Length: 354
Image (tube, rainbow, N blue to C red; front, side):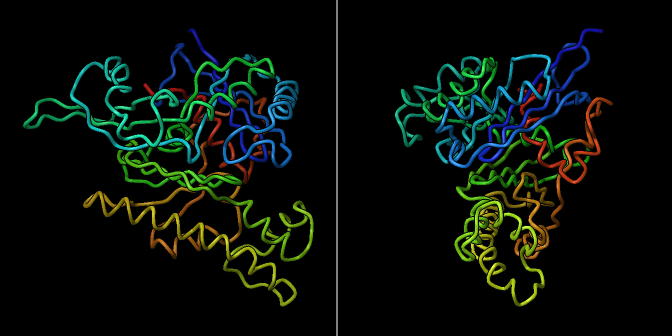
């Protein structure tokens, strides 16, 4: 039986991560169970990537070359993601036509909806349903509009490492493909991926995206607050942050650190909660049933309980490895407790869901 291998490449603020999936039958589909053959990550110095965009192409390219040398991936073809506040995602109904024609017509249909010129944007459309109304047959979907230079900077860094981007995908959709499988594909679920500087919130209903929002904050905001409050380095502050967590009892000598962590974390949780409220206010009768956390920032002790209390929703830590096979050459033990970090590269490797 023919097989195909796909590598999803996640370029984050503090790490580059790649996952290689093998699909049986030579096709990529969200319905089949692929095998994770390789996973590796390499740290990035702060400042190389800012707000989801590559700012130091030379440094990122060097990290990617190291990632490929150490990870021993079988191909240099990669699917990369994009997702920050310069990427607009919104629901859009269009008159029914074949999808290729819908996408070709976007520059003429959406200019008034964009905060940018269509000449400066890369446009895509993700169909989620159809309907028939007074004006005839229509297609419902999600419009994606990304600033062209946001995508270009990431692509150039990847090409500078000798890799070949075969697709540029939306991080939010990748997250959905990695996590909304099995039982979650039948429910209304909010996915919250907390990175160092960017948090992606995706609400999916019965396996389809219904709402996407990108928040310009993440786990490193709390790290910086601790470093400033205590006058210590960022690595030291990261360790202290993980020690005190949020909403936990701490000794007197850690009170200043705990408050430093709490202030930006409360703001982030409030922004996430407000996102849920906004979605549910615009989708009556289809309320969020559960919340799934992924990303490095989701591992802050006490965060899940804090978000559950603020949103009054059950919150769990995501495990994208629960719905894939893991090849014996992957050190599964090394990923224990860090499964949620693999969600984005695995989702990117799925490519466009069939």
